Image (cartoon, rainbow, N blue to C red):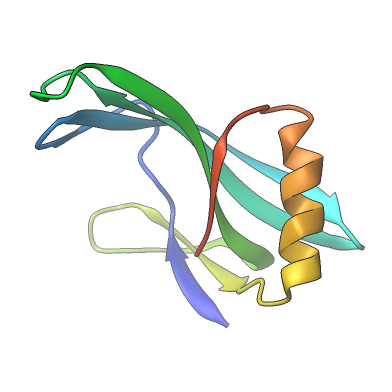
Length: 108
């Protein structure tokens, strides 16, 4: 089990070549367990190589307890089980691709 700090939605996070923003946090049921995922967008607008962007999905894992604590900065903390099996990752990715085609996926 891991501790997960929830993302701050709607805030631009600057990086050297642009920024990214977390847009929404959702849960879906997969094989009888709740999966937490966060949708974001990355924008490259300050690069010598051109401009672009992508939609991404971060999947922290299965929810053990949701928003059960708060950290010192006031952000919610949840308890998460990592998704380790490749067949589970593939099934979750396929299910999410129906709503978010062409997104990049990261299972943390």
